[in-house]
Length: 269
Image 1 (cartoon, rainbow, N blue to C red):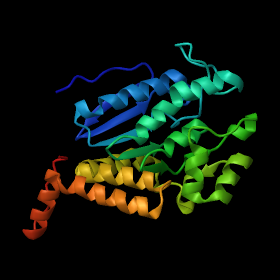
Image 2: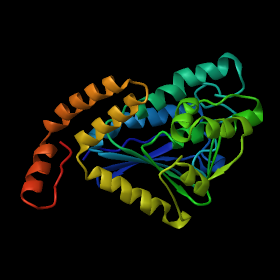
Image 3: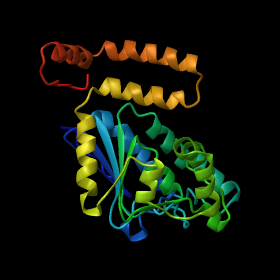
């Protein structure tokens, strides 16, 4: 078995082919300094070696992520807030590469949101394929409250999830959106009781990890690419995706199981 690496600001573990990244600065509600973004990005590189077929992300303690750390980080990368070239550098060199690496994964991603998901933490929480939130949690585009503009890709993802009027509401009014409200809007997958959050998120991640990994990874790419492609381009991408998935061992297993009227046993290959 591959030895798990250790990181300064996150925890990485893998059980039942589900990798779990836990933001681990509970004393600061898991505020994200640039070095935490770097830790997350480095952890993502380990997922193939760990045999991960799904990823679960959550936060230690009372919060998922309260936003960017206003005080900067230990490596001298600066803070993502405060304006000027400092914030631009932090976003371009730390936060944005991490989010792009997360988007490029070829396995499904579940985020389990406990407590606040604010600022870049809100963007990060919504970067997965399934967002499960505890009922006491909330989503907050806090930037306007300190005179800044949204980052972390929220200007791209929010209008696509909930439409322009509600995205504008979240960004320009800077008000908390409860987990129940987020579910009603279609912002997240599900709102659940706090006590059930990790169990529900883990069960969902394990269900995905037991699925046809090549097909799921291909769906992930085609879905996201389709948000900025034409209908014709998406039709072509589906055809290519069908070729890729159709040549996988899981596709052979799926067809055989269907013909033999038995449960599938996907291996992720």
